[in-house]
Length: 112
Image (cartoon, rainbow, N blue to C red):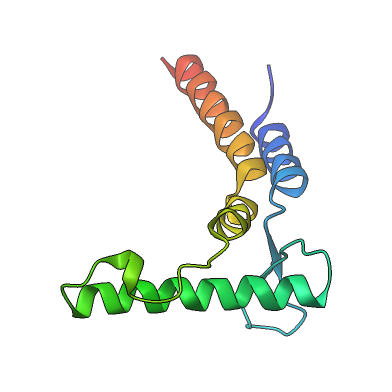
């Protein structure tokens, strides 16, 4: 049977191994940094431009009755934007939530 200290050490190890999407900023109290994989400077510029175009499209569509496809040049790389969104999803962190849920369930069962 594990002691509370061992359980805490296991949880801390899970956190160290699985919290990877957000990295602490090197500047204190500056929040976190999210890394996004890009091929090069051009790729990062085109991704940013596509996100801006998509925002313009959404704003213009809300402001008028014109269809969204006519609101702005529809030459937007939506798949590229969605790939960035996928990179931002914390899949690795989800593993720790599953592990913590299991640990909590085991602890509750031992206390019954």
